[in-house]
Length: 349
Ligand code: GLY
View 1 (cartoon, rainbow, N blue to C red):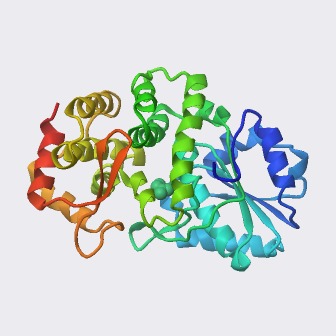
View 2 (view 1 turned 45 degrees about the horizontal axis):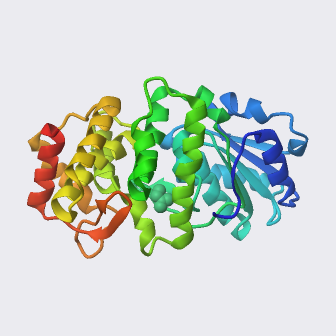
View 3 (view 1 turned 90 degrees about the vertical axis):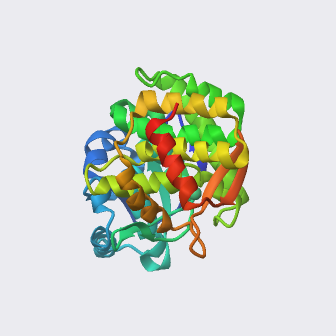
């Protein structure tokens, strides 16, 4: 287990203990406009927040910018922040990534705590120490690895999260199922996402976070096995970038579609069992639909894949599977194989 990751059933108690566990002079609380309205009330009036300075930034990835970061630095400075101050980030991945980067760089680094409020940030973004902002049209282009003192994960926040964002986070959970073991994947694929049972989801979140924790603990700086977490993301990021030119999609939807493609590639190249692939594809098609693409879009999608951060020496890098939990990092595929994979995505099952 990573130090400091807490699966909470009492956010007020756990957050109080975490803040008390990080002695500080000034306390800053970062929210975005959505979490300020929907999530902060659940933890407002905590005695540990007495005298805290609240900073609220715009919601959505459009605000994960240098301008927003500058504003956060400036406010922490104007409120008298020092190297002994503490930042608490309350929000989805945008807030925890940007807030984590603000904390990591302010006065050469202050301590911070993440309180993820979306399913995506609970199971992925808030855990593992990746921080950063978008820059120059590229996602997460500038940032550092630096872990929070605590991540307090409490599914109470999911009560106000819309269905699409539940599904978006759930795609990363399916990925964790695929890279861990059959029984975890089976419970994920048997879950009814049309009417999610939040209690059952909370238990699966705990198991999902454990999968990520084990991997990050083994390879915090993504030199090797942490690349397992990139399953579905080489194609997923290409879909996400492609969608920006027409109708933007949530990250997890693009990852789910990327999983279809990369499981197909796993069947072809590393012998992943076809029946398991079909089971996953069926689940994803039922809950995530499909992004409409034609073969005229293949060159653009291919081009996006060649620009992926994970590539080295001009080859497109994939994480594939031999079987559930049996991971093959640093795999490549030819243009023809990638086009065939996209054919399968459009027509498959
Ligand atoms: N989101 C993938 C990772 O944290 O490595």
